[in-house]
Image 1 (cartoon, one colour):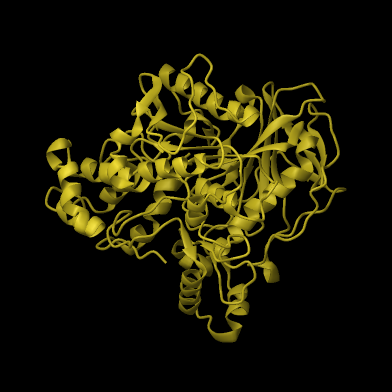
Image 2 (cartoon, helix red, strand yellow):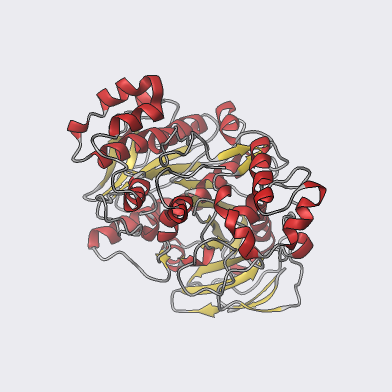
Length: 536
């Protein structure tokens, strides 16, 4: 459980992380991994283990929306591990997105109403006519703090067409539906991750039907999706299900100090122990009126609307000490025991401005010259004097920008570099930074300059809600370079940029990274810029 910031309205405090990430869209149990039937990659009807999919085609490619990859987790199967769909003779209308999974706030865009019958995915292919093509497959796990979002909010046609890849975007269970973990509950705390892994099994069985190669799969995600991808990298159950990973604005090593996310929110990481998850779950069940031996059955009888009252308690509750994640993913990375596959990891230059901006919208006086020293002392304790020396207010245009910079460096940027250094010992690893300060204001932040804040990179490789938000020529150029970087990695395991600088792999002492900036894409001293020698 993450206590909410103090002195804010109850509605706002419980949903600030959700609001920030939703604004971006303003936009294990056995199943066969036998490859499905080959099909004509130019056809809008494709035979899969989920049925005959009837999709759509344009002059740039094909889409198959709302494809079920697991049976509905409803009724007695609410809080059960995903069960693979096996309906090869069914006819499936794949021209419209499936329902988003239940969540606290409306999902922007053209979606059906949220429903527990939400375990669907969407397949986008480039324009192609060669039935012998075996293209790389990129599987996208969306962000949203583990409590919000939908795969169908991310239009992947531009990414698929320019990169010549198959893109699969995935819905997975969220919040209390995805991460509840009552005592004795099989799979408890990890249903969302189990769904994501089941989507990879579906890809193994069906990629060839779309012209994709099931032996060439890249998992990529942003924020909670990236943290899920990093967790999957450490899971013993995912061996052989994917071959590369891209983690944008999230990896196993992130850590928030006291008050580092919002005032009043204690120190935490993206993952929680089974013990802590059970405590959160039992407390939520009690508030919902479900206690004792009948608690799980009681919860299964409750309507979705009632359960959603506790939804935001399950942010950052992806759970270890389970069958899917026996160990804390961060410790697995430190030991070098993750799967030996190539990785890209990176983030945005001004990550925390999304969260500080959202906080100031609700509480304008939360970060001021008067409160800045106290915020530093709460977060960093005995290290506070040195932090204040390294990040004096006089160096910044405002206290919110100072606090955003401290927390970006401490929480996001330097743990990302730490993760890259550790992972590079095991397998080829590349690091990047997105730094276009003119990025579209997807977070709707008006309280401070947005810069390259959390989630502002997503419109550079997806059209959000079907809209290309990039209006400036330099933005489109950066987008092309980022798509080249990611999709060349999907093709070869080594990222390259057409017409751009060379790309160097990380090592255990890496300090320089590739930066996608407003004026140019170049190699920068990332460790110096973010003072990582101090933070890691």
